[in-house]
Length: 327
Image 1 (cartoon, rainbow, N blue to C red):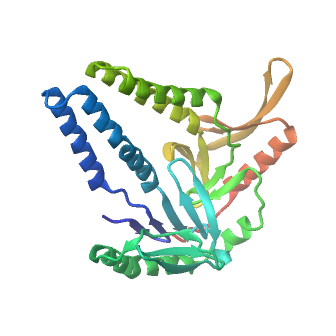
Image 2 (cartoon, one colour):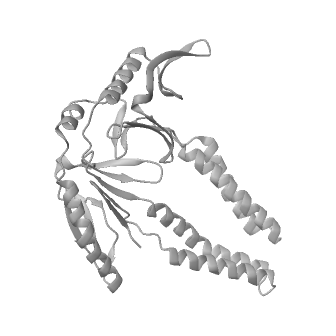
Image 3 (cartoon, helix red, strand yellow):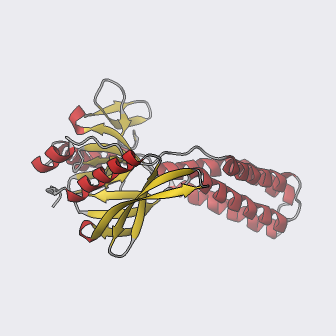
């Protein structure tokens, strides 16, 4: 299974591989236990005990599934190394910091990392174990991925991109592999989300300790998944991401890193501000961008000067003419 993707001026690596074989094995074990219970070969107490013993493995595989979506991105367009998780990305290093790729060995195997200091740095490869398959993966990484990384690290921004963007200090926008993202204040998990997750755990405990009917257990497990899903979504708080891709001159509206709508810069009608009054006392200034076929609120700000600053930064992005080196 390929754990990397090499594109023009970009390298994407999945350092943590999901053990699909182990997951399928646990799924088959669960199916066998259900069949044994339904045919009367084992009792309900034994069924509960075995499932309780398997539960740590299910939780572990769930975490491994989440980690398998973790990506390291070497982006030559923005000359930045990013880490991308399920719902958001994080800037790790700039190419200007002269990052060095190095290998770390241990008893388990070897692994590549990237850093600009003498510290261990950031993981950029899976662990290549001291087995035949692990060494074949390592040879593949050294033959294909390392040269591609060196090419991307040696890439240069166009002069127009450098002069326009490196001289601009953005307050409301952050650089990202996909463009310039309108930043938003990250909110802490609320009490309701924690209560839903706690109720989900309580429902599982009740099903194991007090329920003796298989159909009631299935009902409680269904309740667990519904409550955990609802509470998890509330904890994550999927916020809308508004992205200005200045290289392709496209505006994206995204949720969970999925593009729901996109518009060309040429279709912008106007940027405007409007006052929103709340409870007749407080008011916020909304900054909106209007296209030919849609309108979006970029941000609500408490101060009109901040709104003017946001409008200026947005106009700067819309008017920039860049040379796309990826073409």
